[in-house]
Length: 518
Ligand code: KIV
Ligand code: ZN
Image (cartoon, rainbow, N blue to C red):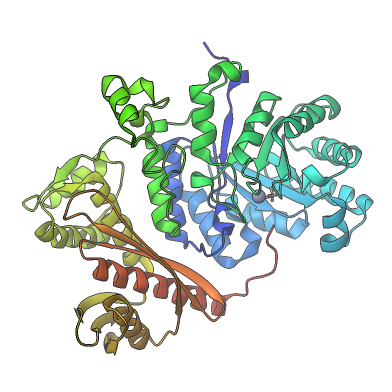
């Protein structure tokens, strides 16, 4: 039996640090959808955002705090007292809330960014943590850029944080500078030299590709919380990947003194797909645990071995991470009841108008595709939910002509709150023509900076999943679209990105976004 002391707390920061990945901008409803899936995955903490960063972040944190049950909800705050109070305002409706206070402690950050002396940083730590403690008993403190902070000063700051009431001390490797054995030694040093009752946490970035290794070295040295992002998202090269940390501990308990997490690992693949779809970040094929090749065997010798016994070349059971072969769930004769029933079995709750929109899209798809699998359903529902909640422009009609002779052209009809708009354009291919027609109809100029297409499932009638990145006036946005027709999927993805640009514009004109990123 495992004891409580051996539990490894999983603190998910996909919605905060993960959302800081370039080009990702999730709105509140998308964040809520991800948070609900993280709750099904059974993470201990969801860091839902950084409330003072923007009104959008504040709203998303308070929506999640008010609605998501199960995990405790955390939000990030600088040490400024007004930031801590605002953070609490966003969190106050959570069943269990944590304020995560941070300040930089490395010389380069203190001198060049904060323009504060070490004494001032020490004082800000005390006051910020103490203020957070007035709001909630659960306070985490992070000395940003810990791995480039002189040890004596870090110990002084961490001791002050514990004295002021912090009960989790997070050691961020903000710039991914750590090497497993030296990061592990750092965690041991903190444990030995900071008196008091607290849990040590790791927060590792992946600049040298070592985020997971460093996090695990931290756990071996005494950390009992690991901060992670689904699919390893996060600033620059990302954070430690949730799926890698969780599965390493599960597959090799012998290396971690029987430590365990409470993650429902069968939900990992679905969580990964949802995050990939909503963020527009495609998964690399050979990504550990969740990549499509993670359980594929190419060479004859491997195939032979796996057919005889899966254990010859697989250390993880695909089903244990939800990577089972996609099951056929519905066909063209299935009705609304069977549709919502299948979604419910998959753990997706859709009701009212959103259900009607998703069902209409399913029927359209069923006319073109013989068998609809779980993965297909997930893809269309995820897309419909996004479209349904907040989009300014909705695709009504698309007609394209093209081929090896003549100029490719496209005509689109979009509906808006003020009625229908339509436009026609030529292009250097049907996808290009469709994108240009959408730009004309929406009056939003953008350039295409990224395009990728993959299939949701196999077979000749597979759904094409297109992810597009656009840039408009220096702002980047991604969009995704699915359809059995790649041109249609591309047009949907294009419009999805345009809608995000439009949403961001109206958000920015409602409230200013301050320069307060961590
Ligand atoms: O990387 C980092 O230092 C952070 C902190 C705010 C914890 O994300
Ligand atoms: Zn970080």
